Image (cartoon, rainbow, N blue to C red; front, top):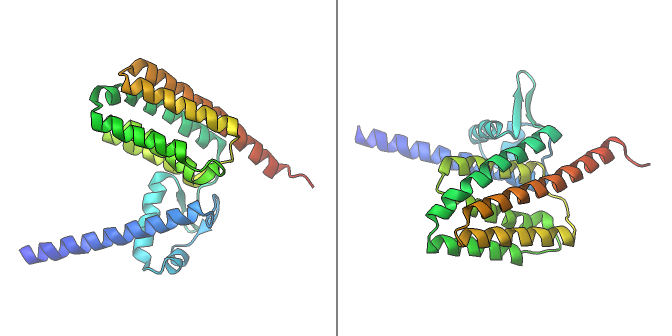
Length: 235
């Protein structure tokens, strides 16, 4: 009985590893824009492109359907969910609710090691390439926010927040920001950091809320502009 349970556990771990590999492969395609919102996607085609069997790809699809990347239409197949202004605004509304609410717990539970982690995340964002905001700088930006949230030790809320950032980065991508916008983001991050390490939970919470709302305004405005250009192209 023990040997049988051991084999079952190994089989489960093997399946999980392959499902994770399929999930990471599809995420990479989304990041590189090899797959785009609204596109029909085939499990069999992606399994061939990823050089793996069909089962882990189907499992990855199910998880990505739960995350909001994919929808399944009976008798038609799987589709990447389309871009939506309403969804984009809702993502930021959830960020406005979640992120500032985690700050008091972060401040209360902050250790010297936590301060060092947050400082490292802040410095990584400051030192990221400024020429292309879309790539490394965006990921370092997210890393700072998630580090700040994770120090609250509210695992469930941080997991939800991570999923929101996944949608923002992989589905909605990023747009080049002006140097002025980058400078303002840097300054807002620095101010939040200083309030957190000083133990000023209220100040940090208010600054973070203002920061998320500022970013929301910029991102939503750029999204509207892009969608208008798609609908009414200049000839």
